[in-house]
Length: 258
Ligand SMILES: [Zn+2]
Ligand SMILES: [Zn+2]
Image (cartoon, rainbow, N blue to C red; front, side, top):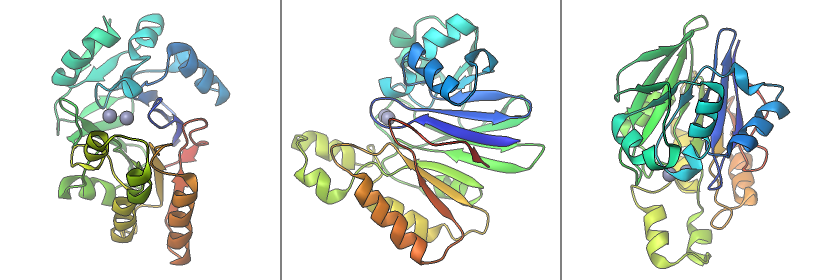
């Protein structure tokens, strides 16, 4: 077994549960402790079974409940050092604290984790590629990223499943209530990916390998499910075998097999 479920994705909170027959861990823990527990239980998963938490970057929507559940349930947490330093004031003391560096592989149970550098207005933002050794399958997680470079693209193209973001629609962002400086920040190379970026990515991801792309971190002020639906629909018409799924803030996704 190698599967995952997005517990929720967006500016309010982000977390993904990855489960194999041997282990289970979260990528990010951006909801309150109670809310994480509730969302896990909705999926039939008791929080005490968590074996770890991987942190991508220090923004509140990614770390909010990490410290609380790590202390309450004695769960190990993995950060890169700069991200930990920037998170410490919010997550407080973590009893089982672990560090990683970009491009260094470490293991949680039967999964090998490869962290890699991404582009965002955080001290040292990270994407993760998860290799499941028994099946040879790969899952890559990269949201909160202002641009896709060759390295990130190659991680995507060699994965069975990709979880990424379609944060904003260029036109809706222009018309949004966001002030100009914030709009500039969002569309900068240290901001977020747009629907246009994702459209290009989907057309480029022709590798036979990738069977599912999950789009999350969808802005509720500068994007809409309708726009993403159009994107999905257009893509489907090309009769590609690759599925494009949406992860929402409220419901995330169901379980998806890698
Ligand atoms: Zn975020
Ligand atoms: Zn962020």
